[in-house]
Image (cartoon, rainbow, N blue to C red; front, side):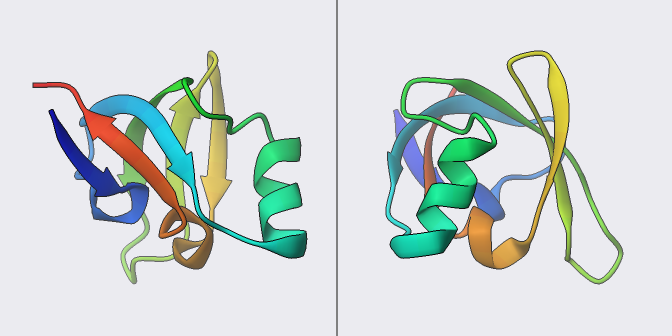
Length: 78
């Protein structure tokens, strides 16, 4: 399997979260939004300027800043 930062995924790609490398308040914010290790996540769309990105996780849509997404690592499903 291929591991990438969530910010590198293309719309329609999906995978399973393997690691969250953020620290402090950013990490807490990511975890509070339900983004946890082992969860399935799908890239929905990327804003024209690249920020924010929209993902689907646990059946709901979530917007993340690119900075936050760069700290979330995903194992890509082939």
